Image (cartoon, rainbow, N blue to C red):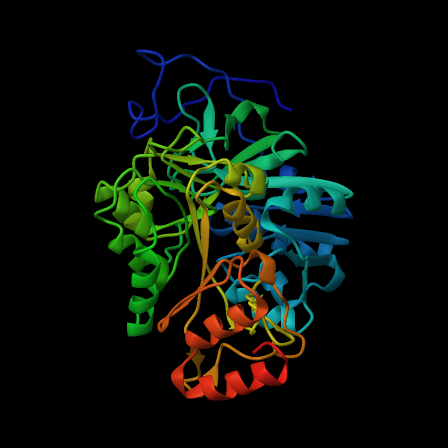
Length: 450
């Protein structure tokens, strides 16, 4: 590492909200930035480059790495859910530079189907350990804020698996002044990095889909079952956004989740979230975030939000320590005993497991906990039922039947926990689209469930 020298640093935009413990700047020494080409030389044959998801991606570093792909050998980019489409996703560089995914974002679905991207099955909480076990020569590259007056940087919009690896592998830092400064277990002294450089990359915005009438009905069924004082796990999308709006009159809520976005911001602004009963010590605990520019501005310096490594936020034991966990997750197909295929349509992979199983387990063990699997009852304009007597051939079971508590469609709520197979089948059929109920009932009888 180069000799240390004092360099200008940037204060947080909201230092008083982050709880500075001093009355003025404290002199710190920070190593000078390293030439990017020198840092790229750290990527040697067989290196597993590990980068965060979403807006945590080190854009300039990956641009430059792809630019020298003809000089690489057996290098892998390990990442969940990238926002940007990249050349190495398409297999253009062959064995020289290949993408290893742990969750397929929309940008990766076609490249994966074409055989250019590898997918590692996982539960989200286990991803840091899986990455270390796979990597012969790991190199973690993260995006952070500029250092504050104590030389500390924040990974901003995400902690995920990368924050869990900060002290377990070499770390290179891409400093981006556009990154919001957030608090949590993803902050560290810039001087601890193996090298750093500056970038100027826009944050990508994620806007939820326009809700449908079915989304509104599902959200109402979920929201009316969430009590005051609950700990919410939800994500980004039409139903989570609607549920949040319907909880605006609730009080003493906390959030323990893997992902927050604009819906949580709006729920805070409504006065519903204060973390009164949280065992985590903060109102909102998350491992990553997707949202709009307004959300990123709200996130900057917000003392209500803490980012934790995913092996904490998604650890079922940690989730279970929170009282009244209400976990909300989506699926694509459900059979008559309650098995949920949430990551593939038959043999066609769409995503991966993510944190669904983590939070179903955690909610099941939480005192007063409950979980909701939400889905429209039909697809393709009502032509296909998402509730079926048997899952499509090749479908991946993401939530096995023993973990599934409540299934919610626009037609109602099927409560499955503690029920017999016959009772489960009858409850699930009752929330299917009316035009499919007779054939589902006949199938259930033929299978011996009814």
